[in-house]
Length: 123
Image: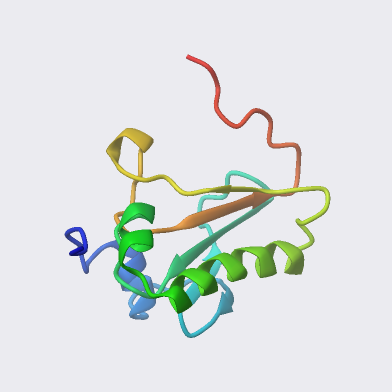
């Protein structure tokens, strides 16, 4: 399956190339994690694959097993590292326009640090 059309000038691609600074939390061969510049919770960290994947659909269809494992292990490692595993944290990854994905590069939000309330507010 071919990858979705990837914009190599999106903000996360530019961060990966070092064109935009970030406050790195953890970097591995396949993953970069950094603090969100507009945090929505006391702990708000973004975890992105280093590969050019538009969203979770693209990633799970096209990434290697090593990339997939690295992304999800990193999310858990970071949650434990920042003390969010207890009392709990939320992970969010928006996929596509209807989910309001703002940046066309797969990213997972780790949110924690206070009671996060309901996951989705009813209409």
